[in-house]
Structures are given as structure tokens and as C-alpha cells.
Image (cartoon, rainbow, N blue to C red; front, side):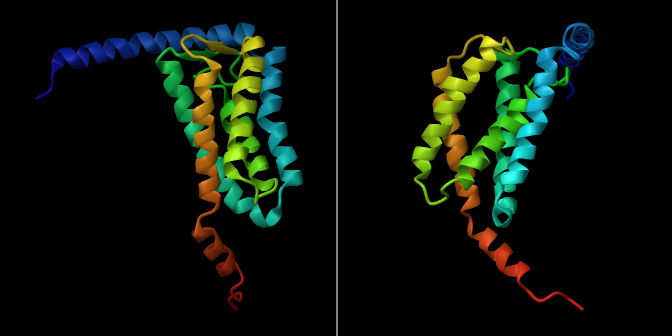
Length: 193
């Protein structure tokens, strides 16, 4: 039942990847850790969340955080996929063993989405999705590419546009679910004695 040849090949491949990961960590320690671009990544991982915390609408924070979590998960998955397939890669990672640029996936994407979601919530979601996609695809991605953080291999900024639109629209949809209204109503229930 077990294919010994397959197991041997997978184990050999895993050992080679492990060696490369340790080599990458050594390179990261020597050239990236505490560099200006590393500090930029740390700042971009923290400061946008602080700003959002200060400007957030408190009554919408829960549902917006669900949307932010969704954006984080999708962004991380797509970034890992793109990196592993050799479509793009990142340099100057905040954490060396992750193939994604964490400030982009856990902060910049989700915070930008939830800020746009809370700004004029009655606005046309398709227009807002297009604005978000244009900003992320044609301003943010080229900016990080120019800094040599983002390394395009087999990708063009235009390819990101429909993906970013879809991510925004799905996040918008998540915030409009009726279950959030039920959650709000349940909070108004008298406290137990």
C-alpha cells in the first residue's frame, strides 16, 4: 500500500528544503534583521492597526474584524501559493521562515479594506472595490517592487486587479450578513443576575 520510492523522494525533498530554510534564516539575520526595510515592515505591521483602532466606528468593529480576518486568510493563502509556485517572492521579510510579506497580508490589505468599508458604508461596493483594487495593484505593489521588497517573476500588476476586486467584494458581503444584526440584538438582552 505504501510506496517506498515516493516516501523516500518526499523525505529527501523535505530535507533539502529544510537546509535551504536554515540558509535563508542565516542570510536574513546577516542582511535583513534590523535593516531599514525590516523596520519599515515592522512599522507597517503595527501602525495601520493603531490608526484603525483610533478611527474605527466602535459599533461596527466586530463585523469589520470578521472581514479583516477573511482578508488576512485569503491574502496569506494567495501569497504562499504565489511564492511556492515561483510567480513572485518577497525579500526583506519581517519573519524569515514565512514566504509572505506579513505587513501586506496581516495589516495593509485588511486595514485598507475595513477602512474603505467603514467610510461611506452606503456607497456602491463595486466602485469601492475598484478603488481598492487600483490602489493596491497600481500603487502599493509597484511601490514595494521599487523598494525591492516585492519581486515579480511571472506576474503583472494587472493580474492582481480582479483578485483585489473579488477580495473586497467578499469582505463587503461578509459585513452585510444578517447574522451580525442578530448579534447586535442579542447584546441588548438584559444581563443575567
